[in-house]
Length: 300
Image (cartoon, rainbow, N blue to C red; front, side, top):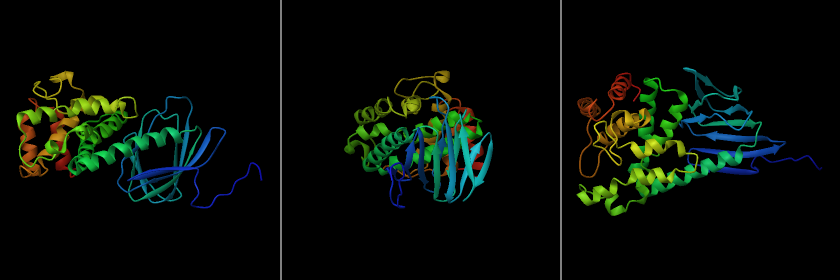
């Protein structure tokens, strides 16, 4: 019958999926969209603001449990619970405690926008994982440490989202570096290190014009240091954004505590002491202090 449609459980209008999440469009009309949103356990994502006018987003939990972090509160929700956002003013963090399935209803057609963003992320992450498995895992760890530091410092939630994405993708420029350099089992020559130093610039260019554009500053400046000895721009002190300074501390901490072909990993305490010895000189003192508190509290 015209105007009526019946669908089986496996039928969708369109589905976009990546390693840890998927979005399936089930129905749409008059600007309204109904989708199935699935997230894997432990994946941090954000319900974001929308600048294109009025927007209502409704989420009904079908399976699993998920925590919502907003206004310095954390609420755990399970099957039958729901949440919604109407003209959201700042991002809300969503973190599944288990694999979770949510029915998503939107008052505006968002599927293409969201699916395009997921497609970009999937493409970048797959290239990084194929290129260098260390870089792939490193990005996730730096994201988690950066978020812990940002929360400890009281960074607003909208900036936390940028920090999370910037930290996750901070090394994507390494995709363009030759394997003979990137995977060299010994220390790099001066010439090879100069090539490695190009990856923040390359990564910054890669995120221009897509949904990761706000992460440009973090990606370009995560190797800058307070005394101007970093690269690629030799920025000093207040020239560096707080976001870039946070990720620089998290990036250095994870690099120190990770084993590489040419050296053993430092212990957590050894890496922390190294960062503390350079706090105020190379690294932001408040970020290093926040890292120490996070470690002491078992948050990292």
